[in-house]
Length: 190
Figure 1 (cartoon, helix red, strand yellow):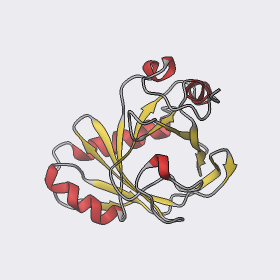
Figure 2: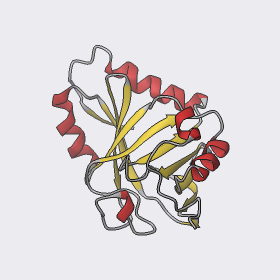
Figure 3: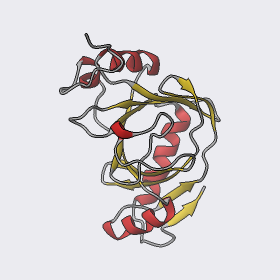
């Protein structure tokens, strides 16, 4: 018998199919600034760096935890592009091999993010579909988000969050900065 929270899906379930297209791709890196500089020649950017992002209540695999991470956000085509580095534990390479408090490895596609209408409902539905909730947290401003295990067919996490006004404004700012960008000042601090 398989528990829904640990079942490893091989095909998208009904909730995942209903989420809509991705709004962000994120890669795990060891240093967000160095990695951002490496993506700029590919036309990604400019990047906006947030270091040691402050979070409120955080749970990893259902237990209270910390998630000390930095991110660099840029724009690539029609998607936000994030580089993410976790500072508070040693690296592992793949989400399925992570220790209980480690959700960011040291390379490769980390997560694909989606806007959802109801974070709690979609998160619960993903668990029923076999995508265990790996991380649940709130930003310092109170915006909730979650990472779910994407399973072996995806090889990356699924991030979900509601498109609240402040988040949409951030997406708009990053996208607008990319329009007509001439490559100057490629890595900026927020």
